[in-house]
Length: 359
Ligand SMILES: Nc1ncnc2c1ncn2[C@@H]1O[C@H](COP(=O)(O)OP(=O)(O)O)[C@@H](O)[C@H]1O
Ligand SMILES: [Mg+2]
Image (cartoon, rainbow, N blue to C red; front, side, top):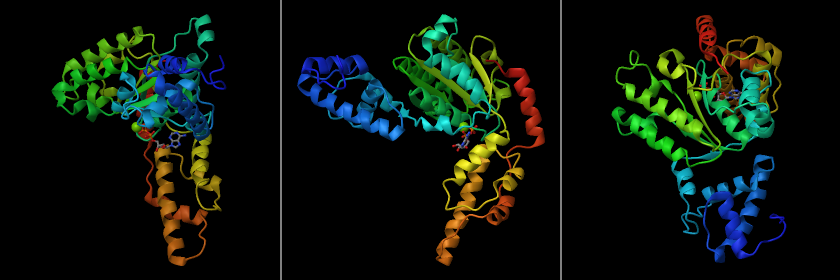
């Protein structure tokens, strides 16, 4: 049956939605909902600039239109997605990262392709990773990469901050983590991201307030996650990999441990030009500015543009005539933005790369 072009009968509509989402609708309302879902699929495809699958459209429709609250459906997953703050991420993030920016190539080959070229991966015995750890200095784009992965896969993005797990006190982190992972295992096609991972998984020496039970809980949850057939990724990120409990870094825990470090020239240029393209009619010597910011992270470049565009905005407001962004303005603002990276940090990071990288 061509499910997009011919309208199924009420029972079939109900069944289709159930198969795609696990949500049960009464046949009397199912056809109406089905039409709205197809509409939503079109809307979402326009918004994201790609053809989204019917399954994604169904789940996003249910998540974002309040259909659950209207009492139209009875589903655990819709409530769960809402509770966990699941979001759909724009696919364009992946495309705006330059191919040369580490670790785009590694992430593409090792994480994205085995999950999108499933049969070929199976044929060659390649197992897609389920647990990933990103490490690297602050502002280098760890969070950005996790969002980009969710976006390019078209999966749900669920961000868990350590404070979410600590709400009931540090003694309850292990229990909260367990509850979270038990819930997450009911989902399909989701990236679960724990940021600032050292906050909950620090070693006993470095974080005395934490208990070994958190590491133990993680060590229990990881194999459970791997046994599961559902398409789930647990991604953790840390600025301080040395602070993590060594037990977590041994082989068999994280499938991939991937460094996210400084930018190369092309990576810096791509990000610079991306932000520049959003400014007013700029007249800027890009090569000259780029040569001055070799130690800037993506976050520093973003901040530089925040400062520069604010000044441009204020000047036009004061002068009441069109104000173009110029090289001179960058040169004026630049001394106020300090690079996050320095030689010591880069050397430490190189050492960490040698010691911990695995994919
Ligand atoms: N190509 C890119 N790679 C990484 N970050 C980028 C890129 N383009 C823009 N950014 C921005 O730079 C910042 C990087 O910070 P973030 O991902 O939070 O770093 P981290 O998680 O490593 O501290 C984000 O605001 C992100 O949106
Ligand atoms: Mg981050």
